Amino acid sequence: MANTETADAPEPSRRDFLYVATGAVAGVGAVLTVWPFVDQMNPDAAALALAQVDVDVSSLEPGMSLTVMWRGKPVFIRHRTGQEIADSAAVPVESLPDPLARNANLPDDAPATDANRGTEGREAWLIQIGICTHLGCVPLGQQGAFGGWFCPCHGSAYDTAGRIRVGPAPENLPIPAYEFISDTQVRIG
Ligand code: FES
Image 1 (cartoon, rainbow, N blue to C red):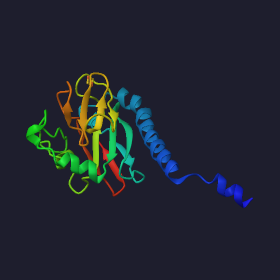
Image 2: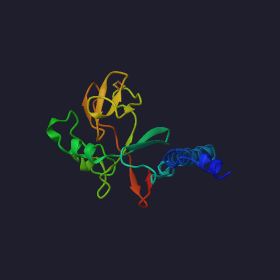
Image 3: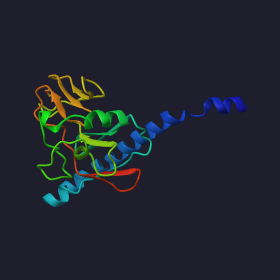
């Protein structure tokens, strides 16, 4: 009997990943369920702007990613490796097709340095809206010539900071407003 129990024990990393994914979907589901009632009350813009998603990222080891839905859009959350950060930081901003950070948490004219694509003290985390800035396809993660995201629709390649490097996409992937509300929880929106 003891051997049977051992064999049935869940494999930890797989289970953790599923937990994170399921929890995120459940959170978004709750938001979507409430939405029709809010909509009936004709909320003003300020009320609509409050839509937020809290995500538990505690199970994301470096090199792991998670996609959650926020305001109807996919948001890529990536715990970057040290190599991914170093690769991005080594690129001169002047060489980038889009030199702006496109980070809703920073001024509009903030340059697209690696640091400005994240948030202070959480440099390993990249949180960005997963919609190609060309015509709106959803790029594929950890693919393409720059090790970041690749959009197969027309061949746009983004780097490990989500910045457009080649292809027709005109801008870096946008970074939504977010904040870490604890060491393991990020609030998007
Ligand atoms: Fe991504 Fe065209 S929609 S390259």
